Length: 427
Image (cartoon, rainbow, N blue to C red):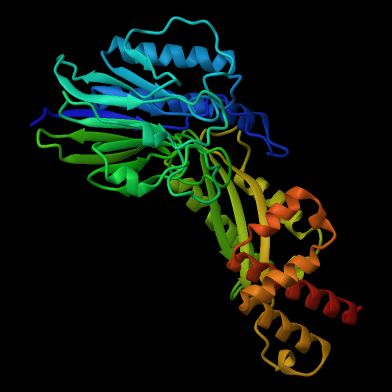
């Protein structure tokens, strides 16, 4: 039997992230985003104190770059010192974004902060606030950014503790869309002697297994439209029998949101405006008084499709969106419309034109047939991109498209070709 204790599991802080790629951003938005990772980290520390956890584990990528900024290191030092003053110990491993060989300022860290080295897996005792042994915490940091070894295979539980907690920055089962650093298999993590694997690297919140628990908390602050919704950490409570209770806590300072607006049934631009305004207010309401960076995707079949295909349509609607959202300088719960993407389609044919023997009919049928056949859709996409695929990045992008993405691309191409033909006929 063990003793009850609580810890906080967080990862991927990416302090001082530069937030590249945002265009025409007002100063208030730029400054809030610039400070958002620090504000989120401060929320994390407040959470640890409020929940009265015994210790904190940080599973890699505390900083955004190997040559971490001095500002980020000083903020880290200050925040961990505040936790130490409250008797909360912190255990840290470094990942691919902040490996051990990156530049580090010469700073004095509190005695209650332990940074795992990069030479071998260490086992360090973790105590409750009353001094009673709660667990052994195990970890190893990345010596350099590109770690392709299976670090999990080096973890071995040692006798002498009632609970064994492994901290690791890794890609489990080759999760798509993420660099395959420190690759390992869920089966090997679940079959060992550890009760909890505190993982980092994947920015989505995922519980891969329970008993033993294998957990990604996600990052603490979204950094792009690919990282939408609540972001934060897990508060984990363990009872005397080793039963685990997890509670996710949102720490994001700025939310990223993507809303889909359909044109189906909309006959006028006024109808679309009303739906866009509704999406803005929905995003604002979900943010719980926090700022939002919003992307809107306009899709569906409808009468407005042709009018939305004009070259300037997306830019014009985006400008209007920003006007409707109001100035970020005037309120704290601002919504900044970052982008508007149009992915609409023409209404389904009611007069049988797609079934006729004319060019539009042949084009529509060819598109449907290619989209339904994965091999044919791949050949069609490769042929269309034959010239540009000479560029390595574009070739990599093309190869990574899923069957669903290829189907959407072909459908959009058919729609655009049909619209161009109809537009020419009407002139």
